Image (tube, rainbow, N blue to C red; front, top):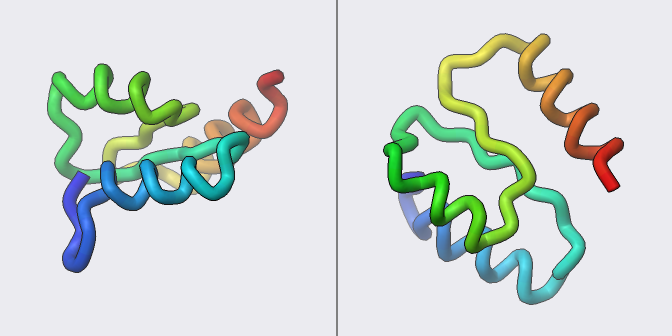
Length: 68
């Protein structure tokens, strides 16, 4: 994940420190095959590769919010 000011991995790690139960849906146009390990390590609930439709986003958010 690539962002201008701070990397996505850094941002998610900081968010998880202050909000350990936060469910994260990561979105990127630059996901690589090795990001699955990073997602697991950071506790990311789901990933979306851009471009995606609003229907896929809605389905993903619903699934993440209903998972226990």
